[in-house]
Amino acid sequence: MTSAAATDQRLRDLARLRRVRDRIDREYAQPLDVEGLARGAHMSAGHLSREFRAAFGESPYAYLMTRRIERAMALLRRGDLTVTEVCFAVGCSSLGTFSTRFTELVGMPPSVYRRQEGQATAGMPACVAKQVTRPVRLRHRSGIEKHLPGRRP
Image (tube, rainbow, N blue to C red; front, top):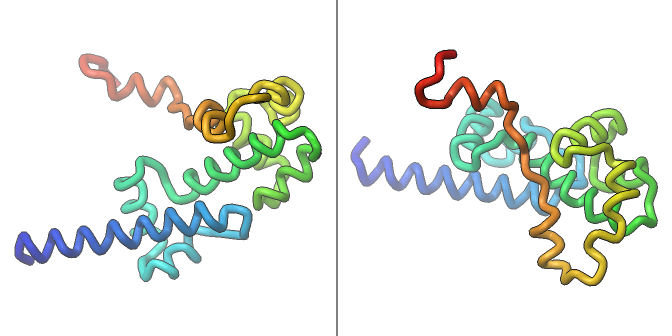
């Protein structure tokens, strides 16, 4: 494959990956799985996962869960829904998995977040509140240490 052809193919692949990411952003509350996302992008699930991670730094599933948790944080701050209602509203089908992922991303269980953060963004413009409260996937310390220069695994 020539350099120009390889570049064209890479651009087409990136466009497909952006469409997958956009679909996750739009349909996060729907039942989505990697196999279905891959079918929609005309890729295998493994290939989609590898390419998505290379392009965006996390797997399609991790990206989906981050979007769901981000939306859950906003709903919990509103305070008018229970944790269970929020769990199902953002597309999670298991309260246990939702609570575990929420705690991993946010650093506290959803019930604690709802109590503590309910008024944290009061009076703040929505665009600022979204940026300030955006969940950040934390890397496990042991995983980071393995890749530091000068450190032996």
